[in-house]
Each structure stands twice: as C-alpha cells, then as structure tokens.
Image (cartoon, rainbow, N blue to C red):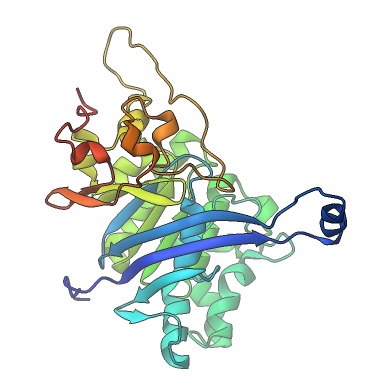
Length: 344
C-alpha cells in the first residue's frame, strides 16, 4: 500500500475531554445548609493538537494521570471528545456518513494494558478473535476457524489453542490474543495503551519485536502509549510528552533523547537508569502531579519546575517550533535562555 505522505491518517485539533460530576441530591441538601459544594470538572485532556502520519509510530509518554490513556480512547472512538476535532484520513469523524464511519471504527483498534482484564473469561479464544470479523461481515462464518488460525500464527500462537479459555494462557500469550483480536478487523491504526507494561521485561522485548514485525507486514500505524521512555525509544518514530492533559513537547525520538527542551521532559530523562559507570545523584521530580480538578494557572508544570519564572505562574505557554519537527511549550524558549540539554 502506498501512503500519501502529505495527509495525516489521524489529526487532532484542540481535542478536549472533561468529566463533569454534578452535585448530587445529598450535596444539594448540604448546600441549603451552607456547605458550598460545587460541580466538579476533571480536565482529563485539555486541548491536544497532533498529526499522525500513515505508517509511523508516535509514542505518548507521561506520568500516570496525565491523560495519555484518555487520549487513546478518544482516538479509538471509545470516548467522544468534549471539544475539538478528530479527523480520520482527512475527514472529521463527527458526522461521518454510515460507510465512512464504519471504516473509521474498524480502521482504528485498541490494545489494552491488562491482558488479564481485557479478555472475556467465559469465551474461548476462537470467539474472542473471530466474533467481531464475522459480525462485521469481514469474514464468512464458515471461514472463521481458518481466519482465526491464521491470525494466531501471525502473532506467534499455536492455532491448536483456539479452543482454550484465557485463564489457560500466560500474560504474554494473553496479550498476543489481544493483538490478534485487534488485527482481526484489518485496522490501519492501532492504539497500544501500555500494551507491555504488565509483562516481564523479557516478554516485553518479544512483544515489541512482534509489533515491529506486524508494522512492516501489515503497513500499520501505531499510537504507542506508555509511561516508560525506554520502551518508547525502541519503537517510536516521534515522541509526544504529555503533562496534565496537554502535549508539552513533540519531536523525533532521537531529538527527544539527545536534545530535550522542556524541563519536564528533561526531568523524565534524568530518571532513566543508565549503564554509565560511576555514582549518579538521583533527583526525582519534586512534588506530585496536580489534580486535574484544580489545575495550576499558567504553565501546569510551574509548581514542580526548577526553572520557573513569575511569568510561568500566570501565562500558559503554547507549543511552538524550536527546531525542524521539534515543538515545545516553555517560556524559557521566549526568553532566549533555553533549558540545558537533557544529555548534558
């Protein structure tokens, strides 16, 4: 398949997702007594712009609670955005006519983090993998067994195990079943939500190699969500760093690791283990991720940033280009005093 390099397969503009918890009956009664309870709004994703080109792998990295998994669910159609626009192959997803909407829904699939919770324990593997393609008429019912067997071979499983239940497999094997289930609908894009986080390190390497092989064989595009920069470095073409619902830095993988610009990215890289001999001072990022119920004003990272300025507390920095293909949201770039390289 030939890719149109000029048209993103996925495009996000100003995508937001807010979870609203209104005051319940008990709260309203309490308010009559002066409790002062208010509707709670969680800003899970707070305005993301991102283009994903056909055939590439974009790593989405950040601490737990930064919104990366929520963003993956928006991209895969599980959660509708509260604001902004998501485009698939150049067309807005919202309002797509029936056949094109179906092409998007089948064309973007998701692999979940927990291989123990994401598979129905009451279904045999042949049904877990084969049910959806038959339901969507991608495969005739009479051909399901052969189709499932082919997918199992493709992900490194013995087709003879198709009669088994999920509890009869190891964690790595279960994740391969989840991969086969995603592939069964012949997608163009796969969202991998912490797809190797629950696996042993040796199994992680095998599954990452499987992702690489499938990418070449099936011409796949990946959105690879992870909290582990080391894992992302092995598979991604570009890396987006998220903090409290926003992308704060985006660049090619090598650029991120060699010339990280945003103080948050630098702090993440400094926490990575290295093979360099000698002692190294370990300085974790101070403080905790702020609550999305009450995000800080200005730059969300300023309460934890060692280089914060007064401006950072009041004015939110916007993503802007600092090098070809490299964007960052930091006021230090405007001051002509860019942060020191993370590799220094």
